[in-house]
Image (tube, rainbow, N blue to C red; front, side):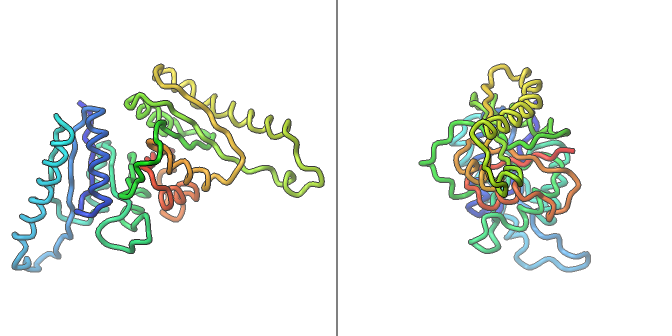
Length: 284
């Protein structure tokens, strides 16, 4: 049986968008869905507020209402609702230790409206040992989204990221485009003679061959997925933000056991400024 998709829900629009995205994904995979609402754990010895039971009941009603709406839209979907004591960061991260994929909204019920990614979401993305999908509340339905995109930097240890992207593309019967952005050598921008088309084409071919060498052996397990390669010269952060605005799902990697400040400039930019769903997959 497929592992459950875990969604952090707090009633905010981003969390509802995350629940809707996860319900669609669960329908594709046959996985169950778990809606989790985390609330602060009271210090030991401190009495419960007078309206504590009432607040708990209201939260469960909210979760039940969300679950019923999702079941109506996605027939056959199995959903569990859970109210847990503790911070959203700790509870969602500990729950995901089973190997499930976490799905979170870009911003919760607190914080500043101008920030596309709140501190809770950022800490979850940086600390998770399993894939995390960040979903926007205001995804523009007019934007064409017909392919999966894997933003890939060539190098060892990225097999989990590639496998995740291939599996997601297969579930959606969608093509996968592997994108790599690279900056020109220093001498290209400072030398007296700019490079010609032949030099640029040779550099792009070299990068594309590196990507093929990493992706295609793994793609043999997914024969129905059409894989395309897109190597382009430019700022990687800018490229991935643009890709996030047009992909069915943008998949990016993140090195494990690194602090938030070391999340990586490309991933950091994409999850802050991109407007489509983004999956961040940890790797060694």
